[in-house]
Amino acid sequence: MHQLRRELENAHPAAAKTLAELQRETRAARSNTLDPFWRIAAHAPIAGDDLTAVRTVAAALDDLAHDGLPPLVETAGMVDVGAVTPKDGRVDLAALQRAAPRLAVANAAVDRARDRIAAIAVDGLVGPIKAAIANLLEYLGEASDTTALAARSAALLPPMLGASGPRDYLVLFQNLAEVRATGGMPGAYVVVRADRGGISIVDQGTAAGLQPFDRPVLTLAATDRALYSDRLGRFPADINLTPHFPTAGRLAQEMYRLRTGRTVDGVLATDPVALSYLLRAIGNVSVPHGTDLTADNAVPVLLSRTYAQDVLPEEQDRYFGAAAKAVFHAVVQRPLNSSQLLAELARAAGERRLLVWSARPAENALLAGTVLTGVLPVNDGDRPTAGVFLNDGSGAKLGYYLTHSAELTVVPGCRPDRRREMRLRVTLGSTAPRSGLPPYVLGLGLAGDPYTVRTVVSIYSSTGGVVDTMALDGEPTPFGAGRDRRRAVGIVTVDLKPGTKRTLEVKLLTGVFAAGDIALKPQLWTTPGVNPWEQSVGSADGCPIGR
Image 1: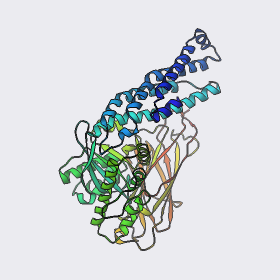
Image 2: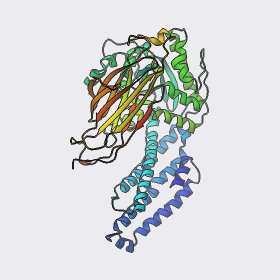
Image 3: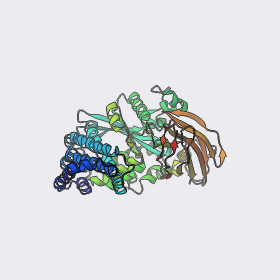
């Protein structure tokens, strides 16, 4: 199976032959477990469970080899990574449409095999069989992730790229120098049209050009209004004060509609760090009337050097717009290394620097559960997800100098209320200079000292959880409290003078667990920044809750 996987990933022509050999092996293994003597031995008191487990594995793998893997081999010849990469401004939708039903069948077969093997009771099995089942489950889990992504992509991309008619998408470029929960303040934007696989820019502008509104453009949820005020729905620069990207997407769509009279079919967001990743794949890009962009200079040029020049904000906006347009044209027109391009896109998506919201609920349903949605997990289960989301409180562009680290641990032991306790330690720092920054960077100076970085920190609990206590630099600190989509939220403001660091320690409680031996593998979501987060997340052994 490992050989076949490598051949499929590389669209190797030998994959069909390898599959045929694998099918012979799985059919032989299954046939052996149906032998009458095997059936009798499976009822023996000592070895019976082991033999039954082996028979289940053999049957599951044989079904997978005959039902799930053939569609993968077929589609490998129809679609490779190059199929989703634009060539001369167009994506080949026909190949994706032909592959979509086969990939759905393959994904379902992989999931069935994984579920059948996961249902095996491993307690009491001999060590080698138990270890083999664990390794197989890990392998099938990885395979399921891959086939699910392929099936979703083949189902989503053709309609989203205009297979049934033109689609327009508002693409927001988040300015990480002015921090917002999903990354940065929406700055320049372009509107991209997809029509039967052809991709072009039909409009561009800036969030500032959309102008504030007198009242929220959509009815805000009471929790959103309580946590982030009605600025969320009134100011284009503040639509992503919330980390919930679908909310930001809907607000951006409506603001654009009200100002231009045009309704877009979805909203995407990215940032200069993701752009720097893309430049590794597409090469250097010339920007008219400005600095050319490379993978190494994109972030400092777009988020620092441009602001240091004594030019009007309108000129800066024009440069940002020109840079966005130049990179877009390079992506859709240049001959590219498809594997490298997709690898860089995957890196950006994994860091939540690529966010997607569709105006069509069915497409959002297909996207659900992926990092592209910008939605915290709806149900945590044994993977409680905490969040650390940042918003600028300075009214400035000092986020370029912000550093951050976070450590999430689970406290050993059980609680009588059937919750588990977690500890979160967040350290923020500022590398800002003490003088010499232009007024445009210093902005409103809402912290008093214009060189002090003021950051509003929102701590999100896991679903059904509690933000219990906070301490700033070792001293208990009061914090604002609220709830957002079944999660508790604690909000505190942290001021950072140049060259300083401050540490926030938070006690979190998970939701209430049903009785059982609860082992935890927590996750931590953070606001993407200019500088990478240093993160440490610890797991915890089982705790016999409710017994």
